[in-house]
Length: 408
Ligand SMILES: Cc1cc2nc3c(=O)[nH]c(=O)nc-3n(C[C@H](O)[C@H](O)[C@H](O)COP(=O)(O)O)c2cc1C
Image (cartoon, rainbow, N blue to C red; front, side):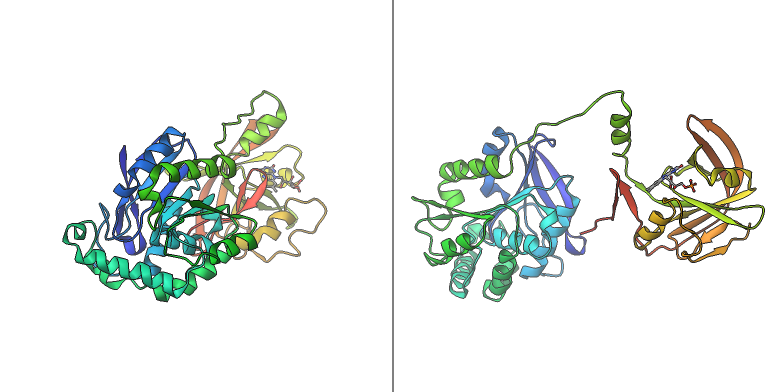
């Protein structure tokens, strides 16, 4: 078992115990209010034995995580913390949340966070929260705050502040927008939800399942861990199965292209000015920096490229790094036929090479060297001048498709 740190909302340090192999499918455990990750110990062990990688998170003000320096423990700040943690994980986990932990996860995923996880299990956290249920949970937390021995597990300011009644409409709305596989587990004797509300919700949504544990009460994951584990593992195997790595290999051109496509790049347009004053350019992602001193970069241009002749003869060329809004420019400079510059705003650079206006970055280069590179020419340029816009996002290319950066 190891400890991992995450940066939560506002830079707070959150801590998790991680166990299992990081290549296995991840499960993120989120405990309830007034608890800590310690409560999940039996669940975490069963998950690791079943081949899952477990991240057992302590919420802010709980367990090993920092207490909020500004005393903020409102529902919204927990949702932001969780989104920040999810963005820092290498793989999209299934989240298993108990009571408030489940509701925090429902809001984080339901409010346009579907890309951050693979599935959601709500233990004792009905996806439709009525005000009465929320009040009952709030009351039980207030009771907790009066038990001195429990006080050490969490910051008492959390217990005094938590207002689930106010959060109930938000949780209910977010749950209805979750399209990931979702399992709601409740104890048959749970007093958190009306008997009919949860089954009705599950029936309305194809992705939602419900499991009732006969002997369970309000804290089914912890009171009846054995039965809870069986239900959880069955759901995971069926809806979020473990995948075996499926490597393709070979020496053929297709495998080579696909393997090279695993390297994510930005997208550039390489431009130069012809002797008769005609601008030429083509889309290229084979761009890389080479040296800082002297400042060198390179780009590989196919020997079949119609632009190559002009580019290799010009004393200067430019590399224009495209931003996320410039995908049409990338398409235009990759297609034969179009008058590429007529439809593209550009201006002459200091050394005459055409600069695409509004690009994320422009590098004006003197031709430094040309090397043979099989069916490509490796064009090395010495950067004379660079310009960039720090606030724009790049256009990305990965596995043959355009992509965008993702920040949570
Ligand atoms: C994302 C992307 C990246 C590309 N990267 C390169 C590259 O690095 N080198 C190259 O020669 N062609 C590359 N191409 C293909 C050329 O842009 C394309 O063949 C273009 O039509 C060449 O124009 P030209 O023949 O007028 O020079 C790329 C195309 C796309 C869509």
